[in-house]
Every structure is written in C-alpha cells, then in structure tokens.
Image (tube, rainbow, N blue to C red):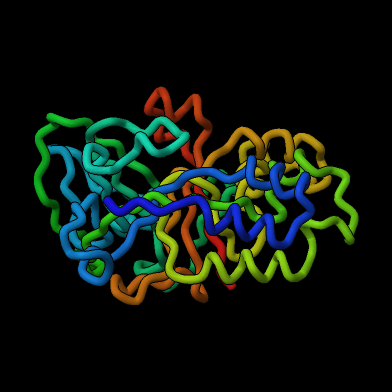
Length: 286
C-alpha cells in the first residue's frame, strides 16, 4: 500500500478560500482507497488487493447473478477485504472475505435495458456480493452471452477526497450558498477539478460524480421517487456513503456510457451489518 498525504487538498483550500471557510471545508474531507492498475503504478511491490474483470470466484453451488427477464450481469470487479488497508477509512468494511461487483452492462441486449435508482424494477441489474472468508469458492466461467472484461490487478493507496460542490454535506455546512459564496469561486472549482484528474476507481471517501451528486440520485430512489424538490431527498442523501466507484478504464476495456462511472452507495448501518443487498447503484456519463 502506498500512502498519500492530505496536504495537497489542505493547501488548495487555504490558497483559494478565506481562512474560516477553508478550515470548515477541510473538515468535510474524507479518506478513501484509490484503486490503480498494479502493472502501471507504484514500485511493483505494492500488494494486489483485487482486480477488475477476468472471471469471478463464486461459492460452489451459487448461481451467476442474473436480472430476470433480461439476462446475466457482467462481472466488474472483486476486492480482497483482508488485503485492503481499510483501517484508514471512515467506513466499516469487512476485515476479510471478498466483495464482488456485477452490472448489467448492455452486452446481452445492446444497451436497451438501463439500471436506474428511480426505477425499482431495474435494481436487480446491479449487484454486490459479499463472500465471507472460509466459504469454498471456484472460478466460474462466464455465461455464453457475455464477453468477460480483461483482467487488471489492482493496488490501493490512501487518498483524501473532497466533496463535490453539490454534495449534501456542502449544503449542510455552508447553507445558504448564494452564487458568490467563496466555495463557488471559479478558481477554486477549477483547482478541485485539476486535482481530481485521472481514472478514479475508489473505495470509500467522496464519490467523484460525472454530472451531479450521486447521493441525491440514490436517496430519491430509496424514497420511491418523490419530486426533486421534496426536502426529504436532501435529508435522506446525508444517510448514504460511497462504497465503491468504478470508472471507465481502457486497460480493462470498460466503457460506461460516454466515459462514465459506476457507483455503489450504502447506509453505514447496513454496511456494519454486512447487508450488501441493500446497497444502491447509480451510474453517470458525460
């Protein structure tokens, strides 16, 4: 594991924001694990903590995840919880076992069916499986309809993340936020954008949305899709944290829409209880 410092984001905030606002902004930063191609980063000695693509190892007798009426889900990634440096996070990941992520990516139906948080009948199109340590597993061949993604081994490094400016924690901390509020300063926004460049596969921390705050999308879905101006949405959005984000990745031949990303969010109490079946999914693209 390679560790990084929080100093770049601290410095960025103090350079662009008034002192009192900067310290409040810094208080919103959260630790994450950035997942990177093990063959293209670091010294080559960082431990492999998981992989994108390839073939999953599933419990013997377990069925490949399927969206009934549509077809099998593609295997996106698997993470070895015992290898992840999760003590650096502020969410309670399992200490061992495996997390496996599956998504109906359109291979079967040429992209006709779309998984969306505000359409409950589509939720079966994205899945997180937790396989506890000690459960016998075996590599599973992909269903004939699917072309597995190329396998890419992943390492992890601790990286501090900043909230998207439209994130509900920013609203809560700085509301009301007129157009001339310091955190809406164009130079500050551009500096944050530059800081977040690059492929972003991530565990924990703040999500990096392609469009708008993903927390609002899953919150609205969890509330059975009330109107967007319903005040309950922002309250509910504060209850959700990022579990995992998987970006478009050329090495893994993964393209989510137009250079988009997949996001799984979960409530902390469900994470503590290992209720990964209650994780919510959304995706965004440019």
